[in-house]
Length: 154
Image (cartoon, rainbow, N blue to C red):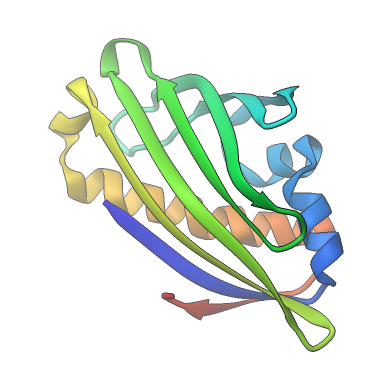
C-alpha cells in the first residue's frame, strides 16, 4: 500500500525538523501511542494501539532513520509486531523545504502487513492507515502550535 501527501506548516524548517525528532511531539501526534523514545542515534522504540475498526491491535517495534540530511530529509522505516495478528511494516521518505516563512513537508510512504491482520482486507487497513497519517500531521502541527494546510498528494 502506498501513501503520500504534502503539507504547508506555518513554522520555520528548523522548528519542524526539531519537532520531527522530539519524542514528546511525536507521542502527542501519533494516535494510540503509549511510548516512543530514542534507543540510539538513529533508532526509536515505539508502542502503539491502532484502531482498525473491528479490532484494535497493539504493536511494539522499532523505527530506524536513514539517509539523514539534517533539517532537509530522511527515510523512516519501522516494523511492529501485533501479537497473534501478525506484523506491520512501512517506510516513509520525508522532505522539508522552505516555503516563505513556513515549511513545505512532503512524504511518500509504503506499508504492509502480514498474518491475521491481512484477513481484514487491504481496504480497511489502507483507510485506517491514511486516517492515521492525516491525523498525525494535524496533531503534529497542533503540538507545535502551528497552522497546517493539507496540499494533497505528492
